[in-house]
Every structure is written in structure tokens, then in C-alpha cells.
Length: 427
Ligand SMILES: Cc1cc2nc3c(=O)[nH]c(=O)nc-3n(C[C@H](O)[C@H](O)[C@H](O)COP(=O)(O)O)c2cc1C
Image (cartoon, rainbow, N blue to C red):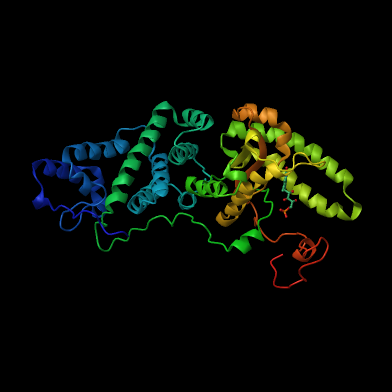
């Protein structure tokens, strides 16, 4: 643990105002019985946020009382309350809060499996719908800084308006507590008490670039579990590092998380996919049928579940900002796209490094009018890629099936193979 940033105040060092706050903390239910040991050191100094609050004792006394009020003066049940606190403690990686409220959560009947899922930023499977509603509200507030309409409507009907406001207030209060704890890192109250914080936040896998590039394939089976905000930021930031003609960066990406919008995209995609799949099957040569069927099975899965992916990244571009050097030739023009797709590929590789599944899709470009209306994409912006991302259902990325380098790279003239087959190559 990080070293404490404040020297704890001992009782004999307190002035009158501090003493009043100190006495209130000791008289509160949280300092009675077994939990007193978690809070009060042998020398009488306080752990948790309380020692810091002693520096501003009148405010500290109010905050102490508010903390108790969340337990005694609310209609919100203890289990959903503790689930919401655990979501906050996880997001802040606040060791002390995670540890204390982990104990309280277990005492109030929250299963360990739920705590473990929260630790891994995954949505737990809940038996209790109040816990589920409190979790979803807390998660969206902390990670998205807003709550989806569907989530709030569900929470209203499950918890009622009063308890819903209490959950949201609880989340705010424990963010304040997390801020104090993570600023001052108070030592635990007793030497024999081991504070066990949440596991470290998932970090980049640190995968070798060649390993990543040689295993980034289409992953179409994605879990609906949310992606932590910081992970999402990392993969989207990787997109911004891509090159573009004259460094124009003529693209933007809309990370679609709104369930209703994702569902609409899924409906549009499903129609386009059905037509495409039918055409592919009808035109597949006989000996290619098993391969086509396998690809189409995973494509069918994506088409049926696109709306459940936690994020669908919609890439759009401004045609007026493209510098097209092949526009006058008597063939399809592709150079414009060269300023757009490197960003998409950067993001795919970053997803690979994060262990996220993803697939580059373009079928929805056919439904650009509806997509632009849905996502309020202004003219002349247009769409060029749709990339659902999420944690893979199965193994995710893995070996590729591609033409090897000896077939695709030529030396000095077209057709002259540059390399011979090499067993150590990545392909
Ligand atoms: C330009 C482009 C468009 C694609 N469009 C779709 C699509 O609309 N739907 C889909 O499921 N996969 C789409 N893919 C993924 C390809 O089907 C996939 O990359 C290819 O079959 C190779 O499979 P692998 O990456 O799993 O080895 C697209 C890929 C590219 C490069």
C-alpha cells in the first residue's frame, strides 16, 4: 500500500471541535462491536476517511453523520447499497473501501461471485433484482457519468423513486470517500489487519506487435459485459495515432452504447447480413462450402447479437477532407479510404492487446441514410466502418488463415517471389 500522507491525530492532540467529531464517530454504530477494530487504532487515532475529516472537524462531523444516515435513514436495503459501494470502490481501486465494504457486502448476503465479477468489471448475474438495479445505476454513473434511460426506468420500477435517489446519492458519497482515501492512504487500524484491495485494474496485455498482428482476426461472438472506461479510451486513442493524407484525420468515431441505438443498428445489420449470407452461400464453390458455412455461422451469431455488444464503434468520415490521387483513373478509387482504415486497424490491434474481441464490418454503409439519422451525423459526413467490440465468448483472437508472404510479396517486378517459405514466419 502507498505510504499514508497524514500523520494520524491522537485523541490528546485534538481541539474541542475535533474532539466533538471524534466522540461522534466513536459513539456511532460503526464503531461498536467487532468493526471498532477496523476503525480505531490502539493509540486512539482513527482510520478510514475519519482522520482526514478531523482536519475539518465541523464538516467532518456532518460527513460522518451522512455516512451513518445512508445506513440508518434510507429505505434502500443493505445488500443493493453495498453492491453500489463496491462498484465505486472497484472503479477507484480504493483498497480500504473495497476491503471494508467487501466485508459488509458479504454480511448483508451479497454472494462472493458477485463481488468477484465486480472486481473484474464484469456485470454479475444477480438473483436479487434490487442488487442488479443498484449495480447497473452505479456502474453507468461511475463509468459513463450518466445513466441510460432504460436503466433508470428499470431501477425506478424495481427500487422505487426514493431508493433510486438513495443509490445515486450513495454513489456520490462513496466517490467522495474514495477521493479522501486515495489522496491520503490511511494505514489500517490494526497491525494484524490485512487490507485486501481489488485486483489491479486490467492493463494492456503488453503483447508483442507481431503476435498481435498475426492473431487479430474477426471475433464475432461477444459478451454483453461492459468495457471499463479506461480500456475503451485506450483502444479509441490508438485509432487517433493512425496516419492520414496530409495528416487531415478526416474521420471521427461514435462509440454507440445506448441500448436503443445499438438495437436499431442491429435491426438494420440483420437485414443486410441475411441478403449477403444468402448470396455468399449460393455463390460458394462446392469445395469451399464448409469454410463459407463456418464463416456464415459466426456472421449469423453477430447479426443476431449485434445489439448486445457493449459498444459498437461507428466510424464516419468527411469526404471533403480526403485527398484522392486516383479519382480520375478508369478503375475503382481506393486512395480516399487509405486515410480512414489505418485508424480502424489501429483500434483492432489495440483491442487485440486488451483481450477484446472485435470485427471490422461494412455492411451497414449500405444503410448510411438511416445510420446518419439515428446518430445525428451531419452532412457531408458519411460512414465507412462499424466495429462491435466486447469480451469474447470463446477463445477470441487466434491463428489466421491468410495467403503467405511468399505468395504476396514480390521482388522488383510483379510475380517474382521475394521470399521462400520459412517455418519460423508468423503466417
Ligand atoms: C473491408 C472489410 C469489410 C468487412 N465487412 C464485414 C461485415 O460486414 N461483416 C462481417 O461479419 N465481417 C466483415 N469483415 C470481416 C471479414 O469477413 C474477415 O476479416 C475475413 O473473413 C477474414 O476472417 P478472419 O479475420 O477471421 O481471418 C470485413 C472485413 C473487411 C476488411
